[in-house]
Length: 347
Picture 1 (cartoon, rainbow, N blue to C red):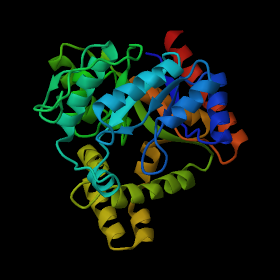
Picture 2: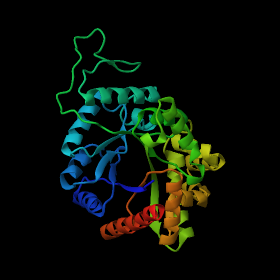
Picture 3: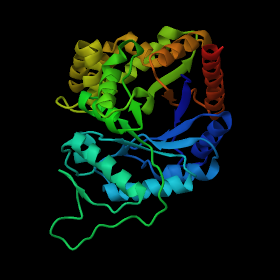
Picture 4: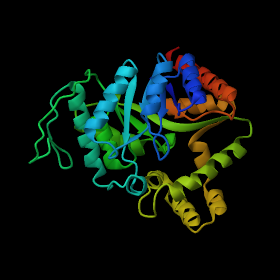
């Protein structure tokens, strides 16, 4: 297995475009564009496609329910055309706080919505007439004046990756997606995620080789490992306390399934009580270490081996360092280590 590198990117200004262009020059495999409640994930890909040649460009993630499946298909085919077949459609359900609070869209039956959206995008991208009779989407709309229509865009294969954390969504990823956009992942408890993906794949007559597995990690080259790990751990207080409600926090559930339930619950309680400093201090140092590549190059190389040996195909990283030059130098240093790991495997 060859380990690949992906980056988080937001090319909505010149610095962002330069960052993706330099990553392309250095041989980074894919640039992922986020979509939360600031910039959309699609428009930056069009801009990045115009200034790059080889790097793949993916959404991580486009939020399901904010666009009809037909519009999502049109956008995907447009970006596939603009990028010369380098586009990846990364999809995710987001959560009720964003969908209902920001978009005003009911957060309802997320697994069914994901499954049906995948089906419709694939129908459209093949150039077939869009006829669908699902629980959520019925095309054409029954009783209306519409007729089944096929897209007039050039047809193309659109790789679909899913951001999934819960068991049902992980099984759907294995059964229907081309890739997994993983998060909250520890190499030591990889089976919590990968067993579900494998079960889904087998149910559909597929294997894990049919699914690209990519997970998010932070990277910091340093000799002061404990201080850096503490700083990264502190950041998870926001994830556990604010990235969801008391009832619905998919990240907390994913950490709990990997043995961190008591810690997550304690951090969330402190955060919701308004004691943000205590919440940050309560996050175990091991979470900062386990979720990131922290240390001198030798230690980072050792941890890269762990990800590859766990079955991960690609890691997704944020910017390394504070300045643009540090960002680019960090990519180059990490690429060298990944190349070393891959060379060791094949030697």
